[in-house]
Length: 144
Ligand SMILES: *[C@@H]1O[C@H](CO)[C@@H](O)[C@H](O)[C@H]1NC(C)=O
Image (cartoon, rainbow, N blue to C red; front, side, top):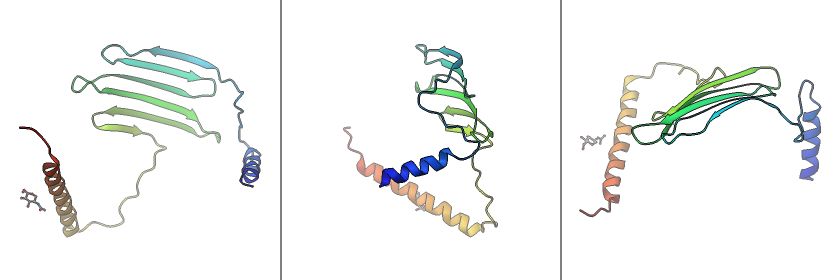
């Protein structure tokens, strides 16, 4: 029964106008593929473009601090409805930092937050920090 519902939904979705349905047998040509494999220092890069309009490039290197790889790159493609998608990112010690007009943005808070509320939030964060500091001291099983 579930299978029949899936087939019916798939048939409806496939019939939607303007939608390109690819089969797994379709071959997407690789138009460009410049790859520099990681060196001993962790430096690498790749720049790939496929016939279906996906462009992906990225480069990175090993960080001197902790050996972690820091990288940056871009991704772009066109959605089935024709809308272009572009994303730039940097990934480093500060985390993964994507930038794209397609990413959701939180709405502005509808009113000014009173100072006493901000003070209470800061106090709660300090209590949490103190508590986890106390717990980490309690969990410490070291040999001195
Ligand atoms: C957190 O710990 C510090 C240092 O012991 C202390 O001065 C402070 O009052 C504590 N904060 C809270 C909110 O308990």
